[in-house]
Image (cartoon, rainbow, N blue to C red; front, side):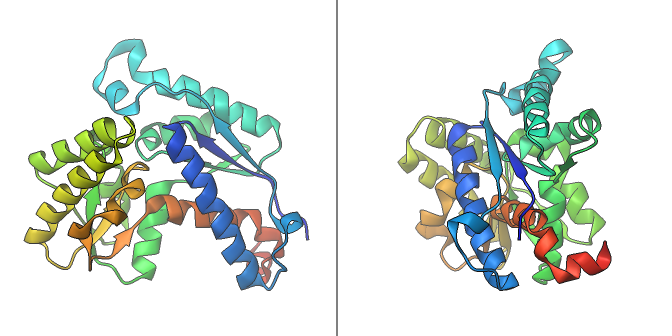
Length: 253
């Protein structure tokens, strides 16, 4: 068995890209076990992480002129490098970056670019979830990335109020990105708790790659189902890597 080579477009930020690689390795282990493949070093797929500096995505979405597409140009460069290495599929280790998904996919049509919100929506449907509390960046909310993907499969997308969104942004920038996990945990926990008070049994979707690095350790979300779109995306990328070893996939190709 020779798995397919796949790629990860990271660097947004570096900690999130590194953590996504960990999630991908874990997903590969689970995939091999499900397929009855021996879990050895040699049976993991060739996978390439492009950890490159990309201009801030949320700030770019607020800008006009050349600054608006600055992240796109950086990501296109990384995607082309991954394509040159022969990868068949690529996952973007950033939610907000998917605002440029269509342009990225069009610039490299021979590589399958996975879509984090669509993969997450399909996962929630499979779990029987009918509404999700979206914890994300202002940029992700503005693009309605998850709102559209959820609506397509009949899931209600619930967003925090403006104060909750501000807390999330503080936790991302002054917390995780600044290396202060205590601030991140408090901000994320407060935002999630505020949303859960209005919707007591809601599933919380951690739709920014920095949020799962701190929120699961918060006592304020104890008892709530947390969904990490990064983990969902990692599982989807692992599925693509082992497509050649999956009889079900072979029967549908």
